[in-house]
Structures are given as C-alpha cells and as structure tokens.
Image (cartoon, rainbow, N blue to C red; front, top):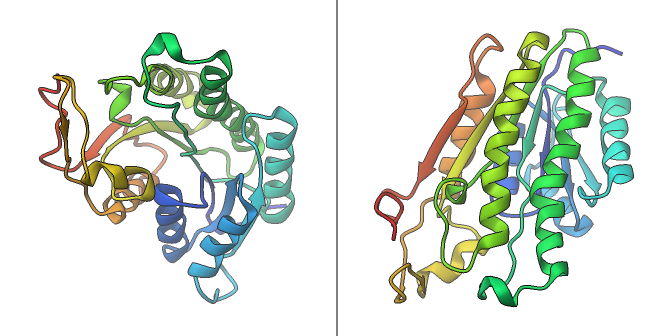
Length: 254
C-alpha cells in the first residue's frame, strides 16, 4: 500500500508539546497517529483538530511506549491505516520526584528510563523498519531532548541521564540510517508553557539553592520549530536545535 500523503506519529500526544505539535502537523496536512497512555486525552487532541477535509486524519492509539509488544502494535496499526510513515516525533517523557538522588527508588528510576529512553528506542526501531521498507523510501525521526540533554536541574538525575542518552541515540540513528534516506534530529526545548512547566511561574529550585520563578514561552513556538525540521527535504537535516524562553537560566546555569 502506497500513500502519497504525509503521515506523522507523535508520542505523548495527549498534552503539552505533543498536543500542540500534533495539531500543527495536522493543520499542515499531515495525517497524525496520536500515541500516549491516556485515551481520553488523545481523543481531546483529535477533537481539537476540528473537522477533517478527508485528506488528513487523526488516529488516537493508547499505548505504553515502554512495552515492546504495544509499540509493535502501534506501528502495525499505522502501517495498516496509512501505508507509510514520514515522521516520528519521539516526544513522550516523564520525570521522577525532585528529591536527592540517594532517596530515589529503583522503581522511580526505572519508570523514567522506560519512557524517556527505552520508549524512544523502541519507537525509533519500528519507525526505521517501516521507513526502510516503504516506497518512496525514507523518513525523519525527531527526538525531544530537552535543555536537560545539556545541563541538569538540581535533583533531576533520572530525567537528565535519559535526556543525555537521547543525544547519543540521535547521533547513532543519524549515522546508521542516513544511507536509507532516514534523517534524525533532536530538538532541545526550554520552558515551553505547558501544564508540566506551570510550577515554574511560582518558583523552582536553582543551583544556588534558592527558589526563583522562570520565564516560559508559547508552546506554539516549539510546534513551529518541529514543523520546520519536518519540512526539510531528506537531503537536509537539523541535527540539533535548541528553542527556549530567551531569559530562562540556561547559558550560565549554576
């Protein structure tokens, strides 16, 4: 089955960056597979897209991306429905409680690794298989790295470790897959205005031990950046992009 329409799959599509990016992709003409844990939130994302003209569709698919069998089912459904995949946005992520590292449980550590790193790997693996086999061949994978792929916040070891690892995964995918017309890039996002970052307006712990509010930026700026990366021809790639609230503490953090 060959589909000439662009098809994207977004993980973590039920809220925040994932929802905003899914809606932006749909508005740009993509059919979008909406992946995430919460079926009701995925349905809300689909509903927010409004009526489709019949060319671009929204397909909610509840999934635990840390589960290999569920990830295989997700991509099988994508292939069955659309026949191809042009873009994977590996966006889903979670953190652990902001407590000293030695107080974290193994279960808390493992949960973050399962979603942020293993989930991204499993989804990329399935996307690569599809993109290598489809006609026309190729596609693009964009990983959500976060500012924490470069610099940690206090008490963020699991999140920071997995986001640093995403950088290595991005480079490996880019290297191993370029001969198959598959591009891989990473977007590192700082303080997009979502539910996850709402707490920053009241104050978050800084490296010097004080609590301070941090500026945030419109999440639509992130969606627009992903659209730019996705819209490039497969002969070009944005390997790394950082988009952040201009006055947030990053350069010089700590």
